[in-house]
Length: 180
Image (cartoon, rainbow, N blue to C red):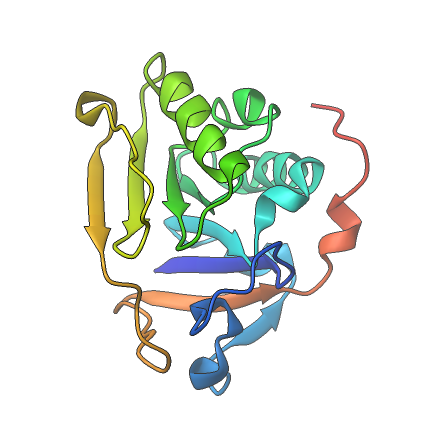
């Protein structure tokens, strides 16, 4: 079983039709402590925007590794921060998104992340919304998968088979300074 673990619903964007609202999946969504995912083979850390809380991410990954050192851990984000250089060493992969109407910081972050992954092994996926008007330069050889496609229309955000949608019940517990 795979866990799609929501750390926060906060996000710096306001994308129309955002799947992170999860309205259509509320009936199947569970709020759980981190211990709940101890037997899941994969954990996908998501949000809102989890990179708003990088110390929380590092602490949660540390706990997930203690629970099960061989499990796969992935991060879903659209926000590059310098601390990504530390986080990339802790996860098995990162799914990076450029949303419609990206800011210069969004595009710059994408380029910084793309440069960073050129020196790391892992599963790195990029998704660019097809409505992005800016020219984005992509180095295809650094990405495991790269897609330009239509944003998922509102109400069409289905959870893949074999995944549970979970909300972390006590994320603030993991938001203290990372001690490694």
